[in-house]
Image (tube, rainbow, N blue to C red):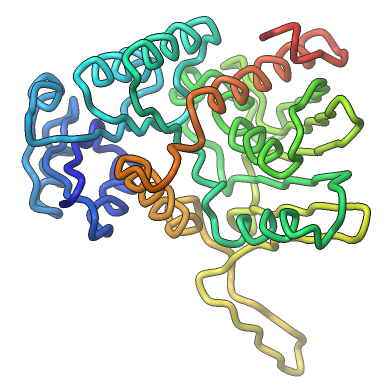
Length: 333
């Protein structure tokens, strides 16, 4: 029997998840809710589901699970409501911008023995998972250093910047989770630098657009993260893992992987233009993982606790920039 879904939020990421849910034979998209009726109706028309209110989805007997794609400041409240309603919850990152609020939310999830999975989609990218598989096989030996490059093709609107929680909580948080995924050890120290190099308006809004972060584990393993809100050449997504026996890397992906050679030299097609196309397979795979967890044949990972740690690392990076020093994770947790 297919898992019956309600979709909360019909914006950009809501559309991505609607495609992932309806593309899985084990899932059925039953209803969608959004504060903008036209946005919800567009998804309903495309995928043949109903438009309902959040309250109706919460009380519905024909919905087993929800995908939360609403604004960040609604996530924790919605998680609690739907866990109490007995529905499994998949929630886009972050759970909240406040560590205290996230901790309180996770207490509610535990108290009701709820299922919660957090949307760190990059763990499910086939190229990045292949890197992790080589680590698990021991091909590169003990992991010593990780390098993560993540640069967006352009900055979001300043209005979004103002409510995003800042680049570390909004953008780098994905890379914090990926660093944990690849290092295999918990991170104990964070040092970050940040600047405004792309758009002065981002600085006026109190944020940065260009950051570097160095993470360190208790044993000395390190991860370096490079983020920018501007990559004129496309969506830049690369990782490299260096170990005691060698290294493994995942390069940038293109919609078409060809190389043309002429008298003028070698050329390749442009990179993907953004996450909607670059991570299509990852979004589908994470929803499949969520469904497997509901069916009892897998685990709902990344967990709420993974979301908590990633946010704590973001808070540590913010503190490091503000105070110009190394910050121990224990200081913010």
